[in-house]
Image 1 (cartoon, one colour):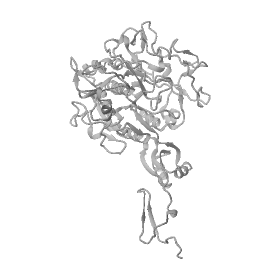
Image 2 (cartoon, helix red, strand yellow; image 1 turned 180 degrees about the vertical axis):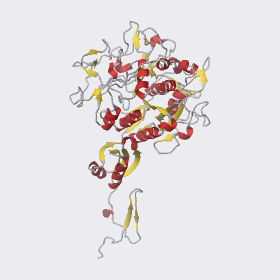
Image 3 (tube, one colour; image 1 turned 90 degrees about the vertical axis):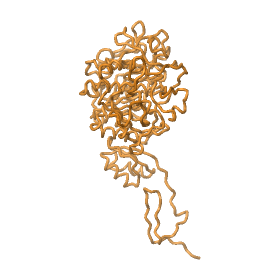
Image 4 (cartoon, helix red, strand yellow; image 1 turned 120 degrees about the vertical axis):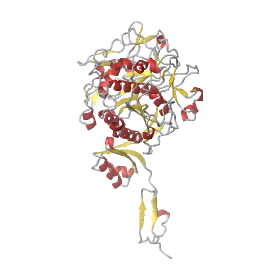
Length: 551
């Protein structure tokens, strides 16, 4: 009987290619001699620096999939054993699961035909700035989303200097072919920079028609993406910030928070972009109206988080405007008031292609070359473009100063009696008004007490001023710890005290998994039937774009 012996001769294992290259001197192993292939998971490995992390992943036999220098990390595919080995590696500080994220969902709309041109530039005063020559010219707006179908806008071609189609970056593949098979990114880009004119008299359809558009694709054509792809996209944007004058970053997506804001790698990338001088605008999410429904990265205290409002399909009648029922509300787990502002986000008309995923799913909302979509995604795009107008007018403004001007000039929703129609945790400072922001002189009213450098270094983390009483009601505490329970009053009209942060402490109200109760003050009568005005002086109305009642 012949005995089976192991071959003395040798073979080379090509791990990266996923196969074994056997030498001619080897014999074929038996089934029992073949080790079963171990499943891998996608993770984000963070350490002191990228080269050390990359080397550590290779050392344990893992595969590096993304280089995320902005947060000193790498995306990787690891087996359970490789992950366990890395957790003990001196070059590694944290390992995160590479979470999935998706663009904010489409909200329900009715079938009323609202008209052939966009309303939202006029509704936030952007048309007045256009007449004054302020169009966002020279300011780069990066839209990190599902990409861009080029040329998506009537006058935007590769020959148009404010459309850098050759720069469109695909963070998924690491190439420069960021085509949009979904439609969400194209829609947002149109809201921001569409320089086609319509209406009577002719007016731009986009908020900042002169701005430079940079499309960064981090979500696949089904609308889904990963943390690693998003972070790689932000890394690219920060890297090219100076060369392309990228001053604004639009993030119209959300994921459920799984940690404090500072311990989330996507939020770390957002903070790094803010520190680099880029105004980051994030959607609140379409998970409202309950409290504490703000997603990541909307829960980032530095960024400008945007909720959505609607006008009930009557743009000339501000008395029936309302906060969209899907618009997510604060506070965040760390006590920060979110969103900071709201913007038109209902029944938004913008460019899209009939063969893209969303228009294919909802063909009844195709209107010629345009498409109707609702969401805080659209509201965020409005604010991103408004920020570009403000920066063109005053290029020296820092992200904190841009945030302050936008908030200080916003118009809160009030009832006829002058009381606020919605809490600060639902509408923040109120609805954005671009022209008022450009002419504002406000200073020092946003991100006071926060230090992004210390936050990123882990030297300090911060909490906001929101608290919850024993009955489950939310309120804002002043500097002495006392506060006014909503809606009996509010502290944010004088100096925006609620935008200040303070050092996080272990004894903070909800540090260790604090469970919020069901009680809160804005459950009953969420949609106000007696009408109210979005105003900064309690008397001056501002109309909003067309939308449909959603209840």
